[in-house]
Image (tube, rainbow, N blue to C red; front, side, top):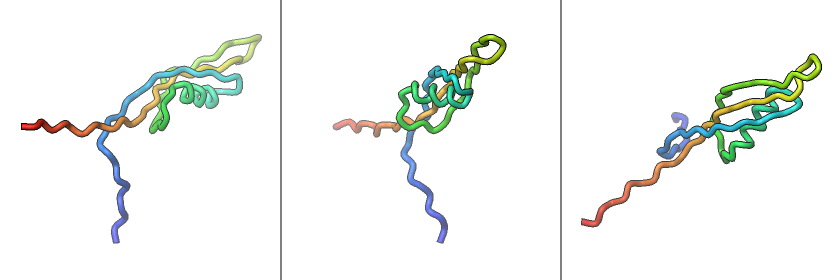
Length: 82
């Protein structure tokens, strides 16, 4: 018996851009940016920019700008009454 494919609904992928920061590292800065995006169910993340504050000879606060991808369902077309 062939494996069943998960049912997917028709939709488009949208992007939301957000920025986050952390004092712990790049990964935490990216996670903070994803949380700041208000996207409920992200399907992917593109890291657009990473930068950090330089404080007394070492990296201080880490920052990340990301584009968070999410799926937006398409509405069924309306049928005209004719």
